[in-house]
Image (tube, rainbow, N blue to C red):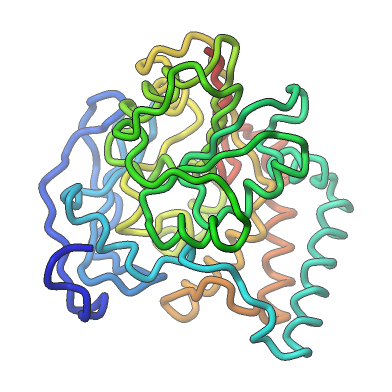
Length: 337
């Protein structure tokens, strides 16, 4: 934790920043997309601007000014990965409502033929690979590692958030590594798969991270990355209220093409990237919250109207994705060593 900020609220702590006028992926200039955006989720102090790359092939989006790397921990002081969702503190009615909404969402996904895609995402697109050693970068409180462990993967996690790592260890008994991945110096060629779910957008220098992943992978090993897509249907619909923006924690937002370019710059030679609408309903529900109230509370109960509207957005995204393959709310990369 930064010195002198232990007892201060998020609203009292100022993050320092520096200008960032060029695209991280291709080096092109950027057009100002939004100005003066607040933190809609955790109340971190300040207002933030987003630029969009003026190279139409790239399409990346980033913060300008960019928070200083040494100040990034400020943005995570009250982050959701610090503990698991404890249903014991919810009322019986809340639990029933939550379970019903989940059942309704699953039924809707089946009706619009997205169930198999959601299942693939839940398994980080590793269903066709034989289980082996797996490392999750940015594992948070370990919930995804437990899913992969049930599929016979030998799992380990890494995170820079000490409270999240402690939660993963204490709650699930997982093997987790605390600290920056490159500085941990884990043994080379140790893993068959490395996964990152909504992590790379938080990383100050993604190419360095991918280079370290390349070093850690066994020959033929894969890295799988999922991240918000700035060219998505959801972003075009909700604009500055889109949940995927999440300033100031999301430093860079990459299109599918941008992810492939990053991986090739890092040294990967076999790269496949695409977008998916599998989580558009979830992202839309949060975006509806932001648009109507100005903020979203992680884990909050959806209203009936939000649930119906999110389902309709999911349907629209599904239909559009048939014709515009780059319109999914999330970009996915599968790169092989």
